[in-house]
Length: 477
Ligand code: GLC
Image (tube, rainbow, N blue to C red; front, side, top):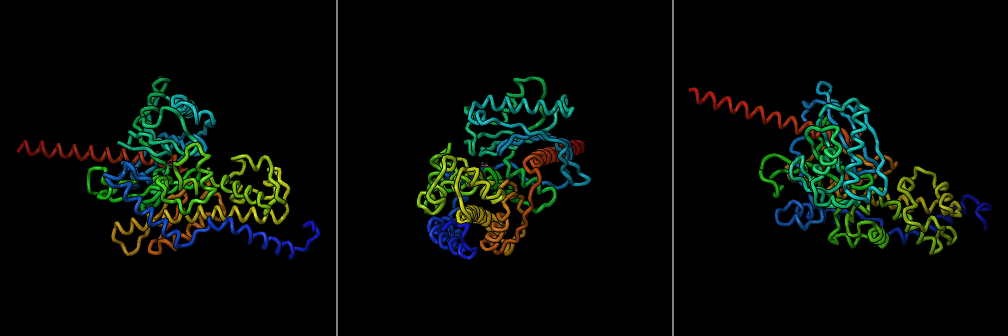
């Protein structure tokens, strides 16, 4: 009988019946609390491997030292430039840090699109484009002629040697420019600026977006010691005890570690929870075998997982009366913003050229909710691993901490943050976590890192000077 002639009750019972069958396909995505605890225990071991002096080079979770040793103390100030590359757009910002008000102000910013071909072109083209955008911005802001310090948020895994020396380990997300992996990104930027020869920049601080996010929240809330991104990609950083950072000299204090948790599973450790659909998403991506955890969680991949599932359900006659469409069979046509339910399901299905009824709509929503719930649960397991680690590091019975968060999936998905928080509470019951959504974290945070680095350099110069004075006085005696 056509649905139009069925009563609401019959439609509901039909949805229920179909959902029961669909459930078989969704089950592998529904991780139990025991599964999540197990994932967390595996990640915890991987964090140790990444930090270890003799194990880090083959660790899946890279645990990269950032050379950020301090969070803001509220005395930073000045004008900065910030660049932000790694999400959906490239941005240039002029940022002012105002000490009296403990505020980081975005004076102005400009978005420059990076064409898809450029994301896969040569490194020289990419950096020339960045330098050109920065040049245009300086003119528009009347800043040409000034040499402002610059924070560069570069959201890819980098082996940082110093705050201004950062070697790209590998591209992730949609980028794959030639001649950049294994090179110092600051040098490539400076060379591109030199090639132009019409402006200059001051000292540079390289920052991962997680670090920028943590630092931008840290000015407001000094207990912010974790930064987390759930957007195009996913990752987190946190303040680790120096004594555990075996690859960097020194035992005292803390250093921010960029975990690159997106790489969790790259050594096969998540094979048992990867579904056949995750395997296809990985195999058909531009970087197979890389960032397995990220591919189960982040915005760049959620839509594709859903699309593959919908195709399978249609093939098995559980959707769209067994019909698919050209668009549904084309990779990349189901976007993550559609997974989040922000767009009307009926409009999406029509746009995809599908013939649907209300039962289909119900099933599509169920699929989308299941995939985004798994993403939130996996992120929660990873975050709980970090908060539990910080608590154990500090031998605390309870940890009170703040996480700075950013990324479109976290910000825009209506149920994501709630689900994530509920799962973290279950997995890390001894941690009281406040979530602070960072406003413009990558931009303002990069400026903040630069400001903190300048403050520390200034303080150590003052210290050296006063040491000098003491020595001079001793000589006089
Ligand atoms: C990818 C990058 C990582 C970044 C994350 C979020 O995982 O490798 O550096 O922090 O995306 O943008």
